[in-house]
Image (cartoon, rainbow, N blue to C red):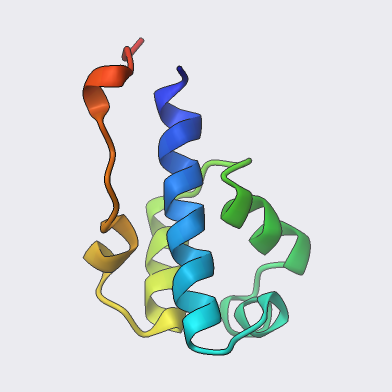
Length: 82
């Protein structure tokens, strides 16, 4: 199992969950973050790694504390770190 991909996918799911709960679309996030909609989609799918700056942009635009984007179950013991 690829820990990086799996972890990014979980963050992406959390972004989707919070965004949809607020009734926002990817285009809304795009407008407020300055990121392209295609980038938003890739982040939400966990397809690309995000910088800490981008992570904070998502938290700011979604109006949540950054730790809320990390509030998910993740069994690190199922993964190996290279």
